[in-house]
Length: 359
Image (cartoon, rainbow, N blue to C red; front, side, top):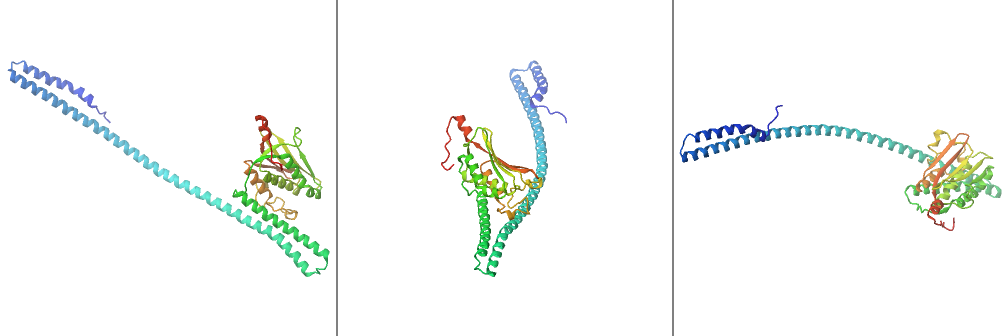
């Protein structure tokens, strides 16, 4: 494409022509014309010069501007074509992205529906078992002589245990429902975690004695009776109680369940360990699911709602923490989580921690 001259360049190129015209006028002036004719000729030359200059500059300016407008128009067309192409490409990309999102949503819904069906099935089974037991005990009593006090007491005791199991299940379901919908008020206060640990072990003594399991409390060497953490006392007590009960439930007879506290400075690590049957890799990711049982052959006979670990996970996450589980089949299982160490923070700021009176 030939390069277009600017108006200034064209004016400079035409200036020699205008100079020639001016020179011709000057030559004629020197031929002895009278004053009137001289002024007329001078005016004519000036008009011709200005007119020629104007016409040339006007033409060159129009040509220059026209060429620039065409260039701009071509550039705009190119941008529009590119934008259209990009828009079509982005539109196609959007459709593909939307389709993939829909596919993921469908997979998620199917997974949730599968969990829902499994949950309903497990819930029905958990409720059906004690109900059938109670029904059997009642029918047995009705078919026998109710004057036999020993028989009546025996079956009523069994029925009562099954009613307790159903009550525990319903209460745990209610707890999980409230935790998931944030309907449980989680007030974090200074708590003496050592006292809470001791209480959890004391509450488990009867269950541990039945399996001849030794309960151990391990504390850092510098701590005897006091270590303040930030937590909701009632909920964290439930975490400790559930995990110790779980360690006894899956522990072997004559084994050991250990409740351990480690001081890390800014925070503390609590853990509950047993030397029981352990958990396989395929089960580790599912231990916190509702009603999921590692040892399905004996779990329901040993009691429990099947919701204990799920409740534990919800409570710890409500404290802004995470719970981890480490296990090997035949080597036992350890659950661990952290809490904020208020004693470390108080010492750093030269303050005194004052927990509620009940802890």
